[in-house]
Structure formats: C-alpha cells, structure tokens
Image (cartoon, rainbow, N blue to C red; front, side, top):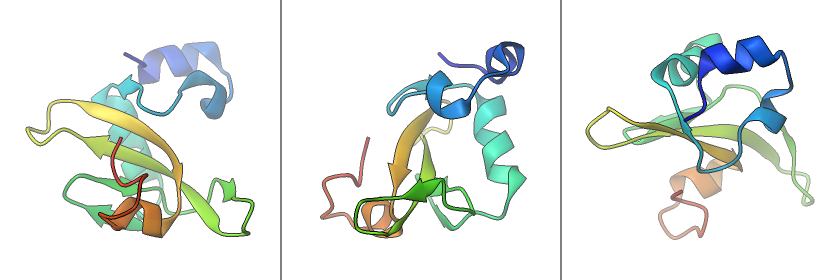
Length: 95
C-alpha cells in the first residue's frame, strides 16, 4: 500500500511514487479529494480538479482516484479523461 506519510518522507514526484491500480491509504485519497474541488465526482471515486496533463489527442487527463464499495480501500487509477472515468463502455472505466 502506498501511504501519504511515505510519499511525504520520500519528497518525490507523485507520478513516480504511485502507479495505476496501486492501493493507497485514506490520507492520500482525502488529500487529493480536498486539495481542489473535484472535476468529476461519482459514487466510486473522483477526478482531481485540474488536469495532470493532456493525452496525444490534446484532451485533458486528470488523476483518478477510486474507493471500494464498502469505502474501506482506496486506489489510484492513473490519468483519465472525463469520458474514460464516467463512460461505462470505456475500456478505462474501471481499474
């Protein structure tokens, strides 16, 4: 599990500390939820309010965070467009 404390102790780049599908602690999940108003918020997670970058089509991609249905486990989902995060037919809809 990737933790907020270890990330802070490391002092490194977030994108190098976590990888898509990594389980993260609740401190990290709520840090990103509260740092900016979410771009999109659904029952299963959220996209951070500002783009992390843009894909090769020029579309904004956002850091995605997910929580388990019971709300006890949290995951980093990588960078996704709004459509990838919200469209159930998208191949990137889930972890």
